[in-house]
Image 1 (cartoon, helix red, strand yellow):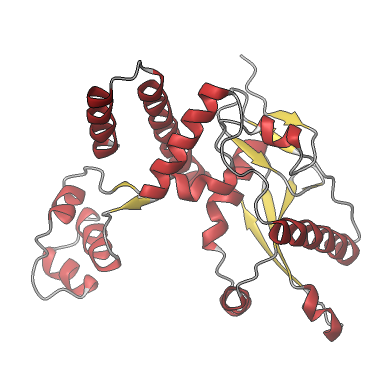
Image 2 (cartoon, rainbow, N blue to C red):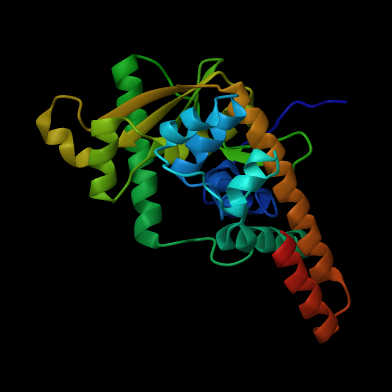
Length: 277
C-alpha cells in the first residue's frame, strides 16, 4: 500500500485550499484537538513520575514537595497506569466541526477570519521568508498543503528547505509573547504544529521563524527570530496515537449527527457522548 504523503499545490487562504482541508484536522489545530482538562498538575506529575520510576515513596513525596501522600482520584488513576484527563470543550468543538464538514463536504463557519489578521499574516510570512533566504543564502520552496496518504490529517506548509527542512512562520501581535520567546526560547505552544508538520511531510527539521518587521530599523537582524526544531520520534508517536483517538471521536459525532433526528433520544446520545469523550 502506498503510504506516501499527498502534496496539493495551492495558495493558502484560497477556496481550493479551504476545500482541500475540509473535514481534515491540520497541524495548526493539533494542540487544541488534543487538549485535556482534569489532568495532573505539575506537583502531582512529579510525584507520579517518581513513583512509576520506582522511587521509594518518601523520596517521591520529597521530590514533588509533598508532606503527605496525595489522595486525589486523578493521582490514583495515574499510578494505576490508567489514562487521566478528558477532552476539553475546545477539543470537542473541533471534533463536531470536522464531523459536520465530513457530512456536508464544505468548510464550516468563517473561513476568512479577520481581514487585518489575514493580511498581516501574509505580509509577515513574505517578509520572514525573504529575510531567511537572504540570511542563509538559499531558496525556500512554497509547497501548499500536505495530507497523509489516507487524507486523515494535513499540514499547510510555509515552505520547504532543501530535502530535509522546512519553515514555520509566526507573526504574533502579542508583545508579551514576542519578548518571552526572545528571552526564553520557549516555543512549546507551537510544538504540536511543527512536529505534526515533520510527521506528515517526513522531513527532519523545522526552522521556527518569528517575524518582527518593526525592529528592522535596528539593522542588526532582530527583525527575524529563528530557532531550529528537530524531528522527535517519541513525541510524534504519542501524538499520532492521540490524533487517531481524536479522529475516532470525530466519527462518533458524525454518526450522532447523521442519525435520524429524534430530539429526546438524540439529546441523550449527544450528552452521553460528550461525557464519555
